[in-house]
Structures are given as C-alpha cells and as structure tokens.
Image (cartoon, rainbow, N blue to C red):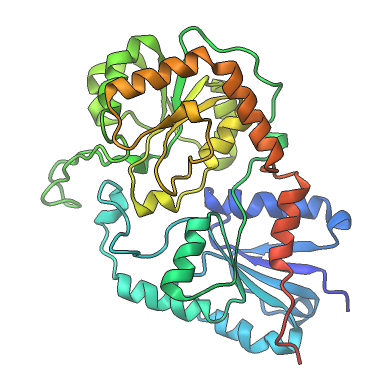
Length: 371
C-alpha cells in the first residue's frame, strides 16, 4: 500500500497562534498541492486509531507533545504493525532550564506549576517520539542537554507569500510609523487587590528593559506610535499620542498589520532563556511587510540575523537608541534591501521549496520498528 498520509494531531490548531502558524498553514498548503508533494494530511485535535487510516499513514505528527498524552504509548505499540514514524513539534519554551522558566513579568508565571511533574511527563512522552521538529536551534539544545534527546530538526517559522507579500515597499515616512507588534505577555501590568490577586500585582516593565520606555517618551513626537491590544502602563503620560489597534486572531492579524503598513517595528527583549527559545518570526514578518525591525541582540537572541544598524544592545541607554533610530532613518533603503534579500535567500516563505521539503523530510523519518 502507498503510504501517503500524515495524521496531524494538533489540539491547538483551532485556537490560533502557533496552531495556525506552525501547523495549519503548512497542512493547507501541502494539501492544496498534494499531487506535487505526494502526500496528504489529516488534521485533528484528537488522536485517531482507525486502522484503514493507520495503514496509509507514513507519519503520526503531534504538536507540543508535553502534556498528558497516554495515547502516545498506544501509537508506539501499534507502530511495528503499521510502519509509521512518530514526530513531535515544539515552537516555544516548555520546561525549566538552568534555573529559569516563565519570567516574572509574564502574567502566566503567576499560575502555580510543578516543573518536576511537567518535566517527568515530557521525558515519558519523548521516549515514544522518533524525532522532534523545533522552531529554533535553542529549543533543540534544550532537548539535547536536558532530556538527552538528540533526533531534532530545526524548521523556522515562516510567512505565507500569498498572505503577506505586497509590492516591494519604496517609501519611508518622514515621521516614521512605529509599531510594537509583540504580544501582551512582554510586560506585567499592575493589578489591584481582588479575588484573583488578593495581594494585588506589581507592574513590571519586562522586555522594555534598560531605557526603552524613557527613549520612547522622549521621542514620541518624532514617531507615529502604534500598539496592538493595550498600551503599556508606563506610557500613560503619552497615551494621547499612541494609536491602539484591537488584538487580532492569527489569520486577521496579518491583514491588520498590512493595513497599518509600518515603517519600523520595535522588538525589545530581555536577555533570558524564555526569549532565547523564541523564534525570529517578528523579523520574518517585518521582512515580508517591508517594515524595518529594530530588536534586542544578545547571545542566542532570535534577532541575531537582523541588519547590524538595527541591533539594540541589552539594557540600552537613551543615547544608544537615539543613534540606532537615526541610523535607520538615514539608511532605510539599504536596510529594506537587506531584509527583502534575507527572506528570499533563506527560503522563509511558506511557498518556498526549501521550507516545505525540510518540513516533509522531517516527517518522513525511515521507520525502524516495522515488522
């Protein structure tokens, strides 16, 4: 029988975010070109054990296999009979590593977690998985060093040319439109005492470390500043100078981003393991949209690859940010050319042969457990 099926188990594919970006976009594109790629994919939020489908399956693909998934053992037990591989995928930090986990400025850090139990479940699940696809080399490093798990392949996050690509941008506003495109978890807003937080919550500037806030306040009249979802509490004094956009689901976010058409995207990051696990997606999106990304650069930062004139040091000063901003405004054509060349040469479009072949090759692991 021709084994031309991938069963993709993605409990998060209907919730937006990584489920859409890491899985649904790939699945839809491959299924639209099934004859070309010689494979079709079934996407499901729950495991499937239909024997007719298992006979056709070349791969059982599992997104984020780090929660309780007792059925992974069942797939492993059936593996010799049906001859599929079992491949997992992870795009974000999932464990405590070198004494760090979720940073305190991320609101989800306030939820109690037993990392010993979480790591035990991860270790148990990994023994049933033949290969892990990761979004970053740093996530692969964690699997290697902490879990002694070595069969990993890094497949970066990408953008869909059909959704993102517009005519090549040939302008840069005299008063740049600056967008902070990050999620709300980059800071911790203060919370009053209430039933959920009996002691209240102290506000933390989080990824806006160093003098990022002071620099933005100083230069607010030299930029047209936009935010998604909410305006950070420490910008209250300049709120009237900021344009706020409603937070969008992943599919609508792309359209809103392209409608705004920013000149500059700012991506401040704190130097920690949580952020080292992050992908360079915000840079890839900026390249696709013709926006210049200014981001924090440190060892294993997701923004190591951005243009040198756009690299912000860890804990920057106002003077350092002033110099970077001025360099970007004076050299925007050179930087945009660099970014367009980067996304094209690196094959970080969904539709590129490099991306799809790498993703499918990672799923087409030769099975060694067939009877």
